[in-house]
Length: 264
Ligand code: BJW
Ligand code: ZN
Image 1 (cartoon, helix red, strand yellow):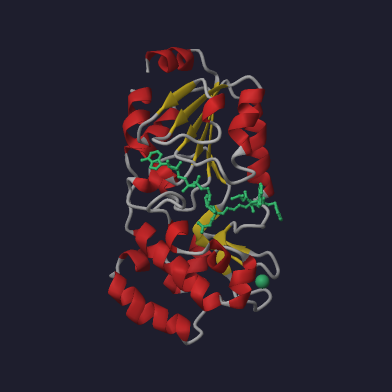
Image 2 (image 1 turned 30 degrees about the vertical axis):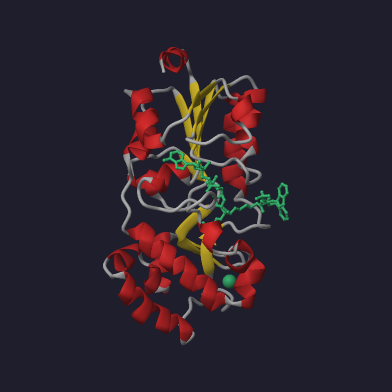
């Protein structure tokens, strides 16, 4: 811990890449690993555009179930520590793969969401993006406030039955069914967010990889780009990942324990 604290005292630009692990202690399941979503659900049936075209009702019910879970979750000390980092360094960027919005709720302002946001809507036919507020007016079932006010039974009995009847969000521009505002497998990442992420990583003095399995591209290549460009690379993860061998500091612990110690 002492070593990284000394390095950070001299750091001008600090970048942080986060993944599902940072939200695990807020009660949001990760994707991989023993209790991961991809252990229980098939990503090719739920997280691709082809799956959505085949069965939009099934895909929407799965996303509404996750949105309901996320709507009830609160940021944990890991999210708050990342938000605090923004005030500690002259240059800072948080690059998150998470779609849950918990970094913003914790107070982070300088961030990019590489895989989108689960409370937004995206029409894949015409490309129109609906920000959270606009999307919840278009389709009130997607509203964070509404979802957080109902139980799982109510979600299944009232909301899923409406979805089964065909109550799905219709694009105001092209009348296609709008999907969740996330990035599915095979889809491009938001260009501006990705460019900011690559550019900041290549100029960072210190770069953190927190709570990500570092298996999904192109996000997984960002810490390695930072390292190649001269950054000190730090990993916070209870498990080893493919980038572990390239890290200068490795903390094998949970983000909510390790990060508050680093910023204190
Ligand atoms: C803790 C903790 C605690 C636990 N504290 N830590 C072959 C080779 C290379 C690439 C490809 C390939 N075949 C296909 C591809 C491309 C593909 C890809 O990378 N696939 C690999 C899986 C093989 N990538 C894409 O398709 C991307 N697009 C793209 O490449 O476009 C160009 C293109 C276009 C056309 C054709 C081909 C390419 C898009 C990727 C989109 C990913 N989408 C998802 C779903 C988002 C929507 C939703 O939420 O439903 O994003 S998948 C899922 O994985 C989600 C995550 O953001 C992403 C990363 O997962 P993450 O965050 O790392 O979570 P986990 O669960 O994997 O890991 C959690 C970690 O936390 C673990 O390490 C734990 O140990 C740790 N942990 N508790 C700290 N308390
Ligand atoms: Zn449209």
